[in-house]
Amino acid sequence: MSDATFQTFLTSGLFVLTASIGYLAWSAWRWLDRARDMEKAALVGVGYELRMNLMRMIQELAGVEDGSVQSEIQLVPVVHPQLDGILIRPNEADRESLTMMRGNYNELDAHKQTLRAALSGQGDVPAAANVAVDAVIGSIATLYLWEEHAGAAPKTARSTRSWHVRDWMKANDFRSDLLPGLHLRDAVVERLRELGMTLTPKPLTYTASEYYAKLYDRKADPNAPFWKRKAKPAAVAEEAETPPEAELEAASEEADMAASEADAAPEPVVEPEPAVEPEMAAEPDPAMEPEQAAVPEAEPVEVESAEPEATDEPDLSSGEKPPNPGVVH
Image (cartoon, rainbow, N blue to C red; front, side):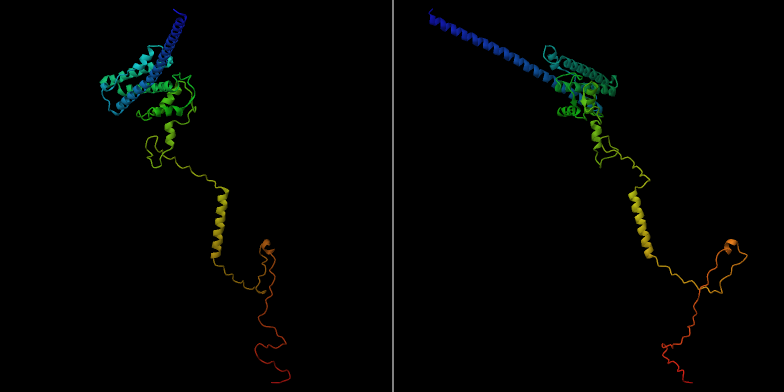
Protein backbone atom coordinates (compact mmCIF):
# COMPACT_ATOMS: atom_id res chain seq x y z
CA MET A 1 0.00 0.00 0.00
CA SER A 2 1.40 3.27 -1.03
CA ASP A 3 1.70 6.24 1.23
CA ALA A 4 -1.00 8.20 -0.66
CA THR A 5 -3.46 5.31 -0.43
CA PHE A 6 -2.85 4.97 3.31
CA GLN A 7 -3.46 8.65 3.94
CA THR A 8 -6.69 8.50 1.94
CA PHE A 9 -7.86 5.49 3.92
CA LEU A 10 -6.99 7.12 7.23
CA THR A 11 -8.77 10.33 6.33
CA SER A 12 -11.89 8.49 5.19
CA GLY A 13 -11.97 6.41 8.34
CA LEU A 14 -11.67 9.44 10.59
CA PHE A 15 -14.48 11.16 8.67
CA VAL A 16 -16.80 8.15 9.04
CA LEU A 17 -15.95 7.87 12.73
CA THR A 18 -16.70 11.54 13.32
CA ALA A 19 -20.00 11.29 11.46
CA SER A 20 -20.99 8.21 13.43
CA ILE A 21 -20.21 9.89 16.75
CA GLY A 22 -22.18 12.96 15.69
CA TYR A 23 -25.16 10.87 14.65
CA LEU A 24 -25.12 8.93 17.93
CA ALA A 25 -24.90 12.15 19.92
CA TRP A 26 -27.77 13.70 17.95
CA SER A 27 -29.87 10.54 18.42
CA ALA A 28 -29.24 10.53 22.16
CA TRP A 29 -30.11 14.24 22.44
CA ARG A 30 -33.22 13.70 20.34
CA TRP A 31 -34.27 10.74 22.47
CA LEU A 32 -33.81 12.73 25.67
CA ASP A 33 -35.63 15.72 24.21
CA ARG A 34 -38.55 13.58 23.11
CA ALA A 35 -38.66 11.94 26.53
CA ARG A 36 -38.73 15.38 28.15
CA ASP A 37 -41.50 16.54 25.83
CA MET A 38 -43.48 13.39 26.48
CA GLU A 39 -43.05 13.88 30.21
CA LYS A 40 -44.31 17.44 29.99
CA ALA A 41 -47.24 16.30 27.87
CA ALA A 42 -47.98 13.54 30.38
CA LEU A 43 -47.93 16.06 33.27
CA VAL A 44 -50.26 18.34 31.33
CA GLY A 45 -52.44 15.31 30.65
CA VAL A 46 -52.60 14.59 34.38
CA GLY A 47 -54.15 18.00 34.99
CA TYR A 48 -56.51 17.63 32.03
CA GLU A 49 -57.51 14.17 33.26
CA LEU A 50 -58.30 15.46 36.74
CA ARG A 51 -60.28 18.40 35.32
CA MET A 52 -62.41 16.10 33.15
CA ASN A 53 -63.08 13.76 36.09
CA LEU A 54 -64.07 16.72 38.27
CA MET A 55 -66.41 18.19 35.66
CA ARG A 56 -68.10 14.83 35.20
CA MET A 57 -68.51 14.35 38.95
CA ILE A 58 -69.90 17.88 39.36
CA GLN A 59 -72.49 17.17 36.68
CA GLU A 60 -73.44 13.93 38.42
CA LEU A 61 -73.79 15.67 41.80
CA ALA A 62 -75.93 18.41 40.22
CA GLY A 63 -78.07 15.68 38.66
CA VAL A 64 -78.50 14.00 42.04
CA GLU A 65 -79.56 17.34 43.50
CA ASP A 66 -82.19 18.14 40.85
CA GLY A 67 -83.37 14.52 40.52
CA SER A 68 -82.15 13.79 36.98
CA VAL A 69 -79.75 11.09 38.31
CA GLN A 70 -81.71 8.44 40.21
CA SER A 71 -79.78 5.23 39.51
CA GLU A 72 -76.28 4.07 40.47
CA ILE A 73 -75.70 2.99 36.88
CA GLN A 74 -75.59 6.63 35.80
CA LEU A 75 -72.49 7.26 37.95
CA VAL A 76 -69.31 6.53 35.95
CA PRO A 77 -66.32 5.07 37.86
CA VAL A 78 -63.27 7.32 38.35
CA VAL A 79 -60.26 6.27 36.21
CA HIS A 80 -56.84 7.96 35.92
CA PRO A 81 -54.46 6.21 33.50
CA GLN A 82 -52.30 9.31 32.95
CA LEU A 83 -51.54 9.60 36.64
CA ASP A 84 -50.83 5.90 36.96
CA GLY A 85 -48.35 6.11 34.06
CA ILE A 86 -46.54 9.04 35.69
CA LEU A 87 -46.28 7.32 39.04
CA ILE A 88 -44.79 4.04 37.75
CA ARG A 89 -41.67 5.70 36.29
CA PRO A 90 -39.25 8.30 37.65
CA ASN A 91 -39.67 11.87 36.47
CA GLU A 92 -38.79 15.40 37.43
CA ALA A 93 -42.27 16.29 38.62
CA ASP A 94 -43.16 17.13 42.23
CA ARG A 95 -43.91 13.75 43.77
CA GLU A 96 -45.67 15.37 46.72
CA SER A 97 -48.25 16.98 44.42
CA LEU A 98 -48.69 13.72 42.51
CA THR A 99 -49.25 11.89 45.78
CA MET A 100 -51.82 14.50 46.86
CA MET A 101 -53.57 14.13 43.51
CA ARG A 102 -53.67 10.36 43.91
CA GLY A 103 -55.20 10.85 47.35
CA ASN A 104 -57.86 13.09 45.85
CA TYR A 105 -58.67 10.40 43.31
CA ASN A 106 -58.99 7.81 46.05
CA GLU A 107 -61.32 10.12 47.97
CA LEU A 108 -63.47 10.85 44.92
CA ASP A 109 -63.72 7.16 44.08
CA ALA A 110 -64.69 6.25 47.64
CA HIS A 111 -67.39 8.93 47.85
CA LYS A 112 -68.75 7.98 44.44
CA GLN A 113 -69.09 4.36 45.56
CA THR A 114 -70.89 5.55 48.69
CA LEU A 115 -73.22 7.65 46.55
CA ARG A 116 -73.92 4.71 44.26
CA ALA A 117 -74.78 2.58 47.27
CA ALA A 118 -77.10 5.33 48.60
CA LEU A 119 -78.88 5.56 45.25
CA SER A 120 -79.43 1.80 45.32
CA GLY A 121 -81.25 2.19 48.66
CA GLN A 122 -78.45 1.42 51.11
CA GLY A 123 -77.79 4.85 52.56
CA ASP A 124 -78.68 8.54 52.85
CA VAL A 125 -78.32 10.19 49.45
CA PRO A 126 -78.08 13.88 50.62
CA ALA A 127 -75.39 13.07 53.21
CA ALA A 128 -73.31 11.11 50.67
CA ALA A 129 -73.70 13.93 48.13
CA ASN A 130 -72.53 16.57 50.64
CA VAL A 131 -69.39 14.59 51.45
CA ALA A 132 -68.69 14.15 47.74
CA VAL A 133 -69.06 17.91 47.20
CA ASP A 134 -66.42 18.55 49.87
CA ALA A 135 -64.07 16.14 48.09
CA VAL A 136 -64.67 17.95 44.79
CA ILE A 137 -63.74 21.31 46.35
CA GLY A 138 -60.47 19.87 47.68
CA SER A 139 -59.65 18.34 44.29
CA ILE A 140 -60.21 21.67 42.50
CA ALA A 141 -57.81 23.33 44.94
CA THR A 142 -55.20 20.63 44.18
CA LEU A 143 -55.71 21.11 40.44
CA TYR A 144 -55.14 24.88 40.79
CA LEU A 145 -51.87 24.32 42.64
CA TRP A 146 -50.81 21.76 40.01
CA GLU A 147 -51.43 24.02 37.01
CA GLU A 148 -50.61 27.49 38.36
CA HIS A 149 -47.92 26.79 41.00
CA ALA A 150 -46.09 23.80 39.43
CA GLY A 151 -47.59 21.42 41.97
CA ALA A 152 -46.21 23.29 45.01
CA ALA A 153 -47.65 22.61 48.45
CA PRO A 154 -50.17 25.21 49.71
CA LYS A 155 -47.81 26.49 52.43
CA THR A 156 -44.87 26.91 50.04
CA ALA A 157 -46.85 28.40 47.14
CA ARG A 158 -46.26 32.08 46.41
CA SER A 159 -48.67 34.71 47.66
CA THR A 160 -51.49 35.21 45.18
CA ARG A 161 -54.49 37.44 44.77
CA SER A 162 -57.76 35.63 45.34
CA TRP A 163 -59.03 37.08 42.06
CA HIS A 164 -56.35 35.08 40.26
CA VAL A 165 -57.95 31.89 41.57
CA ARG A 166 -61.38 33.05 40.39
CA ASP A 167 -60.04 33.98 36.95
CA TRP A 168 -58.40 30.56 36.62
CA MET A 169 -61.68 28.84 37.50
CA LYS A 170 -63.53 31.03 35.02
CA ALA A 171 -61.03 30.13 32.27
CA ASN A 172 -61.54 26.41 33.01
CA ASP A 173 -65.36 26.61 32.99
CA PHE A 174 -65.76 26.16 36.75
CA ARG A 175 -68.77 28.42 37.12
CA SER A 176 -69.88 29.56 40.56
CA ASP A 177 -73.36 28.02 40.16
CA LEU A 178 -72.37 24.53 39.01
CA LEU A 179 -73.41 23.03 42.35
CA PRO A 180 -76.87 24.07 43.64
CA GLY A 181 -76.84 25.94 46.94
CA LEU A 182 -73.07 26.58 46.84
CA HIS A 183 -70.86 29.36 45.50
CA LEU A 184 -68.09 27.16 44.07
CA ARG A 185 -65.42 29.84 43.56
CA ASP A 186 -65.74 31.16 47.10
CA ALA A 187 -65.55 27.62 48.47
CA VAL A 188 -62.31 26.88 46.57
CA VAL A 189 -60.71 30.13 47.77
CA GLU A 190 -61.59 29.35 51.37
CA ARG A 191 -60.27 25.79 51.01
CA LEU A 192 -56.90 27.07 49.74
CA ARG A 193 -56.73 29.46 52.68
CA GLU A 194 -57.54 26.64 55.10
CA LEU A 195 -54.74 24.54 53.59
CA GLY A 196 -52.25 27.30 54.43
CA MET A 197 -51.90 29.23 51.17
CA THR A 198 -51.48 33.01 51.43
CA LEU A 199 -54.23 34.75 49.48
CA THR A 200 -54.63 38.51 49.43
CA PRO A 201 -56.45 40.58 50.54
CA LYS A 202 -56.15 39.04 53.95
CA PRO A 203 -58.62 38.82 55.55
CA LEU A 204 -61.33 39.28 52.94
CA THR A 205 -63.81 42.04 53.66
CA TYR A 206 -66.49 40.51 51.43
CA THR A 207 -66.83 37.27 49.57
CA ALA A 208 -67.69 37.46 45.89
CA SER A 209 -71.37 36.71 46.52
CA GLU A 210 -71.62 39.36 49.25
CA TYR A 211 -69.85 41.97 47.12
CA TYR A 212 -72.12 41.47 44.11
CA ALA A 213 -75.14 41.40 46.44
CA LYS A 214 -74.45 45.07 47.19
CA LEU A 215 -74.81 45.96 43.50
CA TYR A 216 -78.48 45.09 43.44
CA ASP A 217 -81.07 46.18 40.92
CA ARG A 218 -83.56 48.73 42.20
CA LYS A 219 -86.39 46.94 40.39
CA ALA A 220 -85.50 43.51 41.77
CA ASP A 221 -87.61 41.56 44.22
CA PRO A 222 -86.83 42.44 47.88
CA ASN A 223 -87.58 38.85 48.88
CA ALA A 224 -85.29 37.27 46.27
CA PRO A 225 -82.06 35.31 47.10
CA PHE A 226 -79.02 37.02 48.57
CA TRP A 227 -77.61 38.33 45.27
CA LYS A 228 -80.82 40.30 44.64
CA ARG A 229 -82.04 43.51 46.24
CA LYS A 230 -82.20 43.65 50.03
CA ALA A 231 -84.93 45.44 51.99
CA LYS A 232 -84.11 49.01 52.94
CA PRO A 233 -83.60 49.72 56.67
CA ALA A 234 -86.10 51.90 58.54
CA ALA A 235 -85.51 55.63 58.31
CA VAL A 236 -83.75 57.11 61.34
CA ALA A 237 -85.76 59.74 63.23
CA GLU A 238 -84.48 63.28 62.86
CA GLU A 239 -82.92 64.94 65.88
CA ALA A 240 -85.13 67.30 67.92
CA GLU A 241 -82.58 70.09 67.87
CA THR A 242 -82.70 72.37 64.85
CA PRO A 243 -79.59 74.05 63.48
CA PRO A 244 -79.13 77.79 64.09
CA GLU A 245 -79.62 78.56 60.39
CA ALA A 246 -83.09 76.98 60.49
CA GLU A 247 -83.97 78.94 63.63
CA LEU A 248 -82.95 82.23 62.00
CA GLU A 249 -84.99 81.44 58.89
CA ALA A 250 -88.05 80.55 61.01
CA ALA A 251 -87.72 83.77 63.04
CA SER A 252 -87.44 85.88 59.88
CA GLU A 253 -90.52 84.22 58.41
CA GLU A 254 -92.51 84.88 61.61
CA ALA A 255 -91.44 88.55 61.59
CA ASP A 256 -92.51 88.95 57.94
CA MET A 257 -95.91 87.37 58.68
CA ALA A 258 -96.43 89.66 61.69
CA ALA A 259 -95.54 92.73 59.62
CA SER A 260 -97.94 91.77 56.85
CA GLU A 261 -100.75 91.22 59.38
CA ALA A 262 -100.05 94.61 60.94
CA ASP A 263 -100.26 96.33 57.56
CA ALA A 264 -103.53 94.63 56.72
CA ALA A 265 -105.25 95.48 60.07
CA PRO A 266 -107.23 98.86 60.25
CA GLU A 267 -105.84 101.63 62.44
CA PRO A 268 -107.77 102.07 65.72
CA VAL A 269 -109.79 105.31 66.17
CA VAL A 270 -108.68 107.25 69.26
CA GLU A 271 -111.51 109.24 70.87
CA PRO A 272 -110.58 112.49 72.61
CA GLU A 273 -110.90 112.46 76.36
CA PRO A 274 -113.55 114.89 77.81
CA ALA A 275 -112.24 117.98 79.50
CA VAL A 276 -112.54 118.04 83.29
CA GLU A 277 -113.70 121.28 84.86
CA PRO A 278 -112.07 122.44 88.06
CA GLU A 279 -115.33 122.48 89.98
CA MET A 280 -116.01 118.84 89.09
CA ALA A 281 -112.71 117.60 90.43
CA ALA A 282 -113.24 115.33 93.37
CA GLU A 283 -111.73 116.31 96.66
CA PRO A 284 -109.74 113.69 98.52
CA ASP A 285 -111.66 111.76 101.11
CA PRO A 286 -110.09 111.99 104.53
CA ALA A 287 -111.26 108.48 105.24
CA MET A 288 -109.15 107.04 102.45
CA GLU A 289 -106.08 105.03 103.17
CA PRO A 290 -102.84 106.90 103.64
CA GLU A 291 -101.39 105.60 100.45
CA GLN A 292 -104.37 106.79 98.43
CA ALA A 293 -104.50 110.08 100.26
CA ALA A 294 -100.87 110.72 99.51
CA VAL A 295 -101.61 110.88 95.81
CA PRO A 296 -101.35 114.56 94.79
CA GLU A 297 -104.38 116.27 93.40
CA ALA A 298 -104.58 116.86 89.74
CA GLU A 299 -103.85 120.40 88.78
CA PRO A 300 -106.91 122.25 87.41
CA VAL A 301 -106.92 122.52 83.71
CA GLU A 302 -107.69 125.94 82.39
CA VAL A 303 -110.60 125.74 80.00
CA GLU A 304 -111.01 128.54 77.58
CA SER A 305 -114.43 130.07 77.39
CA ALA A 306 -116.43 129.53 74.27
CA GLU A 307 -117.50 133.21 74.24
CA PRO A 308 -115.23 135.46 72.26
CA GLU A 309 -113.53 138.26 74.12
CA ALA A 310 -114.79 141.73 73.54
CA THR A 311 -112.41 143.80 71.52
CA ASP A 312 -112.49 147.36 70.39
CA GLU A 313 -111.81 146.45 66.83
CA PRO A 314 -114.88 145.76 64.72
CA ASP A 315 -115.55 142.43 63.14
CA LEU A 316 -115.30 142.90 59.43
CA SER A 317 -116.07 139.36 58.53
CA SER A 318 -119.86 139.72 58.85
CA GLY A 319 -119.98 142.52 56.35
CA GLU A 320 -121.69 145.05 58.76
CA LYS A 321 -120.32 148.53 59.19
CA PRO A 322 -119.13 149.55 62.58
CA PRO A 323 -121.28 152.06 64.44
CA ASN A 324 -120.25 155.58 64.37
CA PRO A 325 -119.73 156.82 67.87
CA GLY A 326 -120.99 160.27 66.96
CA VAL A 327 -124.30 159.10 65.57
CA VAL A 328 -127.29 158.50 67.81
CA HIS A 329 -129.77 155.97 66.69
